[in-house]
Image 1 (cartoon, rainbow, N blue to C red):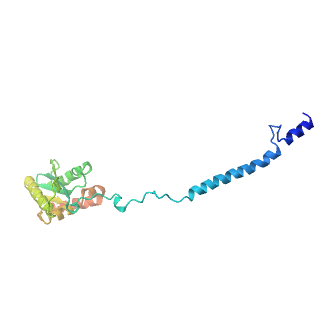
Image 2 (image 1 turned 180 degrees about the horizontal axis):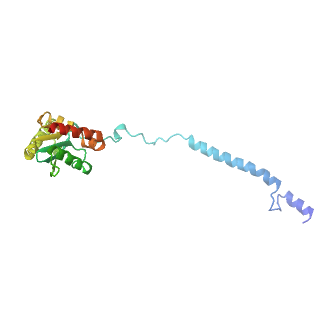
Image 3 (image 1 turned 45 degrees about the vertical axis):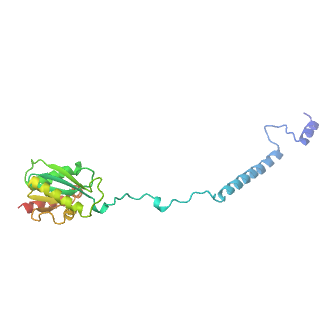
Length: 210
């Protein structure tokens, strides 16, 4: 193509070279990019500075925050496990839905066997819980009275010469246990985890028996 045609096409703004952009085009691209970035920035600032809608949900009231569930008689709830063998009784507050639990069952049997002096004994387990299901009209002292009657029955059935009981159970019974037969013990959970406490208890049992 001769120079005259090229000059004419250039005046009309037609670029013949597709592999290399004309200087005029290269000069315009940064301008377009800058304009595009300014538009985006304007949109972003609009979104951030937007005022909250009048329909924004109010914060939840404090009363709707979940709180630990407490029963009306939480102070008087009682759960006691009674493990007995001929001549000896063990009373322990229950921290599990049923019984003393597998991890502490063997320990309870060993304590009864050591106290009775018979390592071939068979044990029996019973559990007392208060308040009874479905009963609402109760006095605060009713639970302790019912526990006392339950323990008295267990004492008679096993003809207990010795009673092992935790401080919590002793307080619930409020002096309803014979002091000359009573051997205080820590909670079984503590004994299982602390060999020193277990050793001191064995020594205490041996001292009382002699």
